[in-house]
Image 1 (cartoon, rainbow, N blue to C red):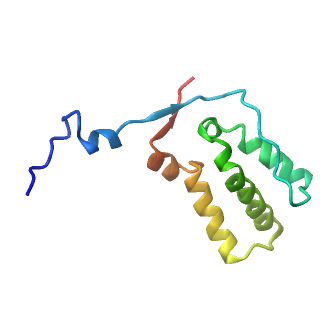
Image 2 (spheres, rainbow, N blue to C red):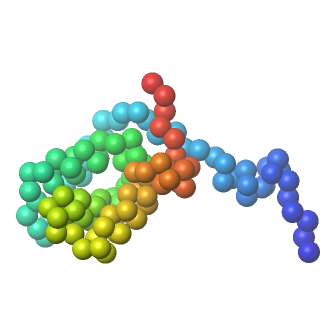
Image 3 (cartoon, rainbow, N blue to C red):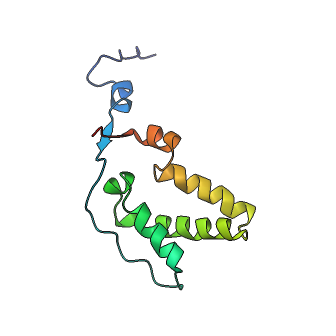
Amino acid sequence: MPRPRSPQSPHSRYREAQKLTVLPLEHDLPAPELPNGRDWSAAEKEQWAALWRTSQSYVWDDSTISAVAALVVYWSAILAGTASSTQHMEYRHLLRALGLTPEGMRALGWVIADE
């Protein structure tokens, strides 16, 4: 059986897991266009813009556009009282996966910079 590596070793997986990505408190990156395929309400457009102004969106790329769009759709359904239990569950999962909860930020190794 191989001997476990010390957490102080430069090749330790433990050390790799402890690295943090510091996200800027603010950024000026533009929000991508909302995806086609549905009519977006004014409230959904505002929520879309607000999500893309978060510190977390600084590290999102084009691959997250559909996930953020789904988050906005679920958010809208939850507020309208029409969301299914599956939509509630997916909303919670997307919040975490996108780093929009404290638990999600910890899992992704993200922290928001101090002023």
